[in-house]
Image (cartoon, rainbow, N blue to C red; front, side, top):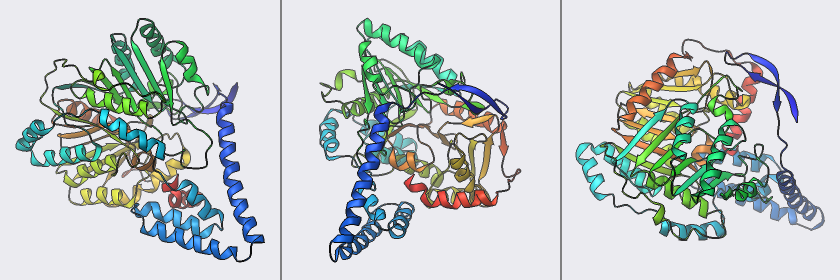
Length: 524
């Protein structure tokens, strides 16, 4: 079906055009309707009980008090508690019922049971020698790497070459060539896959490889692909000999299944080459389809020891979503492919409990901000952060660190853009420099400091990434690729608007929307 929509061109001007709009598969519509019906039914039952059962309102009152006390005494970030407290207190009956159904962000008991088995199969690389060497070189770098390894149950590696791609089309070309060299297996996990030039060309390679005996596994997020793929697309891929699964298939349950999505982007080829970054498999990411001006995204290629960790992350996610477990992870791990490099690399995952007891991505970004001496550069499509992270940016800037943040000038979500801009004044008052990428939309997630440290991955500066989703990234120290990342930052900022010198006036409507969305942002 074609529909007339507004699309931005490369100069940021709107134009009216026709764009192919896919129908949302019936399975998703039914699942969402089922969730609404379940929620309405539970609320209706409680209201009827209050009307017809004597003194039932006392039980409701006690339950509401219990909810309030539970929220206050939870170990959640205060910024996450406030909107739920507001919701429970302001919305009668429905407030605490919705709290019970949707508040919890942890995995199901079934998933937790499976995770215990998966943990035994994940890579267990001895870190002692590498960490000791890092400790001799730089105690601060050692403390960060050690902390990351303990939080994310990951490992620090050397002997890993990396190449940085400043645009999605650069990563696409490299990925396509590497996929053609696969001899044993190909693993791909993405939040979004959409049929088009990008995916279709990759799919042709995957089909050919699968037909020639290469093991191909594809994992895509069910909700992420809700509007981009047919509801049973995994069956289509299975007909090509590809082992395909949806991550956390939507079942229409009134619980937290809209949280805990896989926002990861991982490709692994034969255990020797891996790709990650912000690039999903859709044409706008490589500027074959222009939606919000020039789409700025980045990626990184790993070759060598550290690819083992990306393999382990993929297999854990895959096994979490299949009935038949993968027999053994070890045969897929790095096989000794000789690559020499003195830089330190830590691929890591992030996500909900009980897999992760801490917010890994947020913690590592705050490490950068708290320990930087010269500068911290950050690039993110969204800026919806809690007070703790905001204070870390302010404190770094106020002690003389050159803190710079790059966000889009042409947004993909207007309400989120209002939220993003709502943080500018506070940050700029503290000395943070904010840039908006004038040619279009920034989807990159990159953080670096002092020419020593960098993180490239899937982690946005918003609650979805920092709290709810399964994410991944690559932390690095003293790797030559960091200079390429810095060069990209400098080039991007040169093409961006310095918001310190170009203040914008907020309308009364925008201020109202900002206040409303900001109050509820941790729940979104």
